[in-house]
Length: 318
Image 1 (cartoon, rainbow, N blue to C red):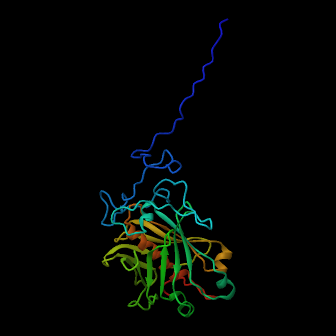
Image 2 (image 1 turned 90 degrees about the vertical axis):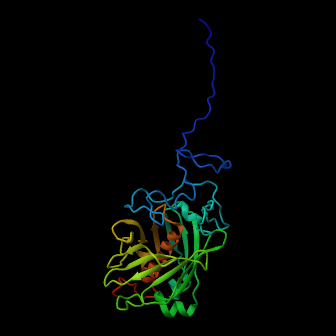
Image 3 (image 1 turned 135 degrees about the vertical axis):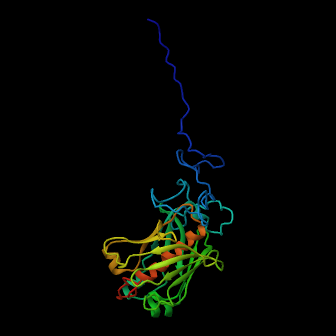
């Protein structure tokens, strides 16, 4: 019987083929995007063939919401343990600080619970975390309103909300003047101005008169209508989400939504800390994405903000 020689061959590790258009070039070790994910280059979401003037395709919503690109490893972490979304390369003609929005088609806005409001009923400046679907913080928002205005004007108060990135830069400013919101006063309805960077308007959200439904128009910096928002007749978040649909100007196609999420009986009953989700097309212009964020804050103050034991509004007819 002849001796059999065992030969051990070491084969190189095999990785799945990269998705079409992807190249793992220029990434440091540990920061490479996992195999099998498509590449989403910043700047490709500002329009394409057949897109409208603001870069979105008028088509029904579909597919899983979330990040447009693959998850990135080695995320920056703050001293308090908060994981921030990595800063993507800015595309051309993008206002500083809005480059984050090129990578996502859904954001989550979480209002922080204030103990002073719970125990004393004293309204303090609201604070919000703005995250992507991976739980990474994209922005942090703080209301800047004086004490007298907050507690005397209540949810109808004029406000300035400053939105900052992970470097502490104020990248978006929201300014809401003192206006009426009831259908009984059609000449002085709600609106909010969105600036990015601060001092440079990029769009507006204007309430439209309707006897029953909350309706809004999203406008660009030239006050030209871009999108419509329509909500339910009865704005009640009892055990379910409340959805405000974002539609094209003809109101035929739904291209996004703003959802007030049900957070549970205890939190809904004893606090006014709300959670919202905002979904928009991936290829929508980042300026209009920022304006949709402003629309979410306006809707929050109009229908879901309350002071002390005062009930929240359930419609524009109140």
